[in-house]
Image (tube, rainbow, N blue to C red; front, side, top):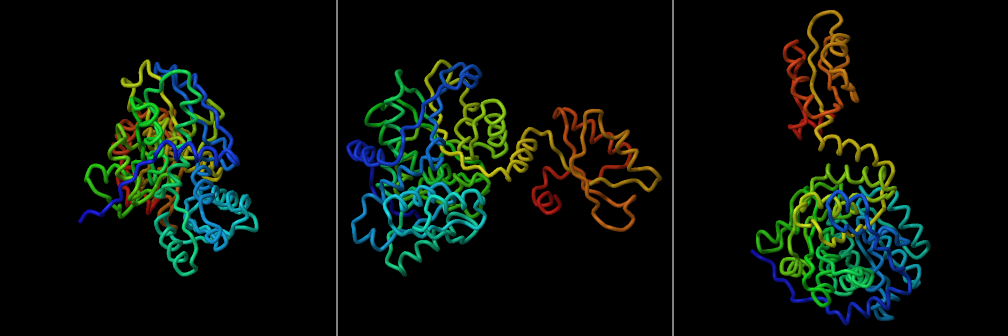
Length: 421
């Protein structure tokens, strides 16, 4: 049964008003040309650097605009929010600046860096509560707390004032660009930023095509649009935490359905490679959600040629402890990292033979773990191998089979892969 949605669309007068309010705390972020991506795609690729806010994401816009709109009674009672990290920091900063008491619910799996930053920005004015495995779990706990304590919930995306605050990103893009914008790529989690941009560009640049980008493992907006109703996903990949929600907003869904030119998803592994490229080649640090829009450019190679294209770099709250996982996912996506169950033949020197004769000259063992503690020389082992080229995989498997080393290939068995590796 479909869920009833309210009719709302952000008005340009309200967006201009939000810009005045936000100017008190949020600096105008740069719109920078990327020489590398412009050359790669034969287009004028511009990066809207929302990662350069003092809270390192655009979320300060909507959070501050929303909290500033509350009555004195509401402010005195305090505010509550739920967030995977960036909205939490925006709310924390707003609470400290406006001296409003805030309670911030975050998933237990939130990177420590985002939790620490939230506490730092909020100081004595905020309390952080870790609850649930996903944003949606935290949101339910936060809303229950609001009802019990009579506080105001500051929604990260499904609120008019929040959407109008995020819409100011679009105002800045249009003010900063000397040429008409053909495409804007925007990451979609709950849909607040995308909805805001739809409002701004419909009013001021209606020919601009807005492309929404979601993680492949959390396609809640895409599924909702495809099915014509709000869809709540049962399971999502939480890796791109800034854009991984099980259910988008009742306000944002109809806006995105009507006004986005296209929705697409990008594999998490491709996003990881983009993060590494931005760091190694451009000295830009982004979180996974911040790299979504740039990773999506490859899917629009023909459409964007010769065009003026803006990618909104939504945030840079990345935890350095995630680097190993980011590299691992990038290698798996590029088909350069492979895991096997290797069954060593019952003959002396089998392990030495595997290393010397089975592995190719450019293959590296990156993971080795015996599956049982006894009879190690003859026990099956889980072996991770990094290749120089995806084309090396077939010959490697064939050598393993010819010499009776092959047990199983784990990359295409996700349940077994997660259990063993």
